Image 1 (spheres, one colour):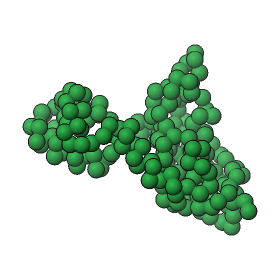
Image 2 (cartoon, rainbow, N blue to C red):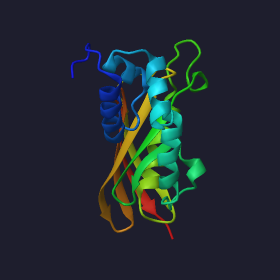
Image 3 (cartoon, rainbow, N blue to C red):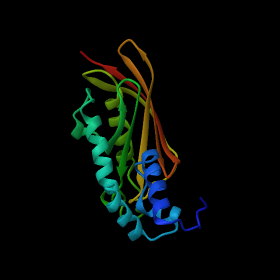
Image 4 (cartoon, helix red, strand yellow):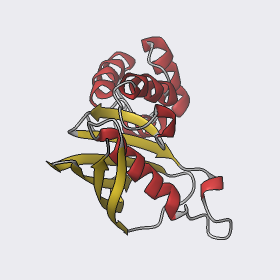
Length: 187
């Protein structure tokens, strides 16, 4: 279906359900743009279909994943834990706010971005206690308050008590941060 063509309500609902299964984190704004309808129409569609708003969908998915984390408490994860395959990979989302940014520039402070990456790296490894032994990080682009950070972590190797984890953070699919962590499991 073309972006500019209006679809009938029934067709829109059918496509809407499929799209929500593929990408449960799509915003009402993006849906309104895609179907060339108002945001209010999308909200009414969601209500009719029994689909909760984005924040509720994220919380529902996140709750399932927090119980899997072994290394840190779920309350210590910076952002919402969206997906977790312990010892393999994970995804978190952080909605940045003005209090995370410098007042003069509205650019998010680096320690907030690093905290999201490090806490996801710790959450994804399959051990009870770990410390960050080494981190090699690079900030690639600025992040403004109000932007949504999506972090993806992958365990690339485990050698003895060392867990090698790569983390990439994006904003609107543009990479803003990358980090390589060596996390050391401690007894």
